[in-house]
Image (cartoon, rainbow, N blue to C red; front, side):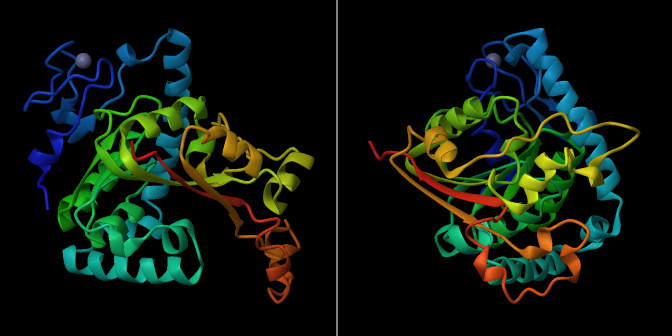
Length: 312
Ligand SMILES: [Zn+2]
């Protein structure tokens, strides 16, 4: 298992892709990424964006989700994680993996949890760090990144307790890794909020080793959840709103869209999951789950994608 200093050596500058010194500075362009005041590496800087407009759009995303995370991390569904010691976090991760298997989520159903030992896994949009905990529990070395600083710090603190990974701030459109350096990429429920999802996926392709695999969940266009949001013009993500801030962007994707997005990959499997009549607003919670099997794979909100980069 690699320790933090060894992990940090793997990073590359997101501006010019050159190496980073032990102090956290790019050896080529001099940009500084290890800022002591943030207690984590921060790979978001003006220099990596082609224009002011791109930087402004990233700032809006960071503002909305960053303030959302500040609020959510203090709520009871996340705050308990930070009172746990390493042993408690380990058993929490085991329970979470069992739950994911039972509920056939991307992590529990598509990711080969038994094959992660000693692999380098990049978790894009790590949030509070729950998934990073599971990945590191499975024996992977986990790079857990979030575009917001509060989430990156939270994940970094959890991984610091259990070992086997590092949390840091980065933008999926500018991944701070050399090409061909990562075994697996895992990203669930994140990249449909990217202002340039094509660029994010081309970055995933770039950093994966030949033969490496990406596991992604994107929101499904033809789903009970998102068809009603569209019809009723709901914006969604209300739990993340703070002081009148609105979610800047959510996109939804058909199976065809997903295959197109991952066209450069060699093998692409797309499975829709998670459909339930309970997703119907207002009345759904009163409906029985008996007939959910009818809509699970046809009107589910999750497009689970497994995409393999060609081996050569
Ligand atoms: Zn540089």
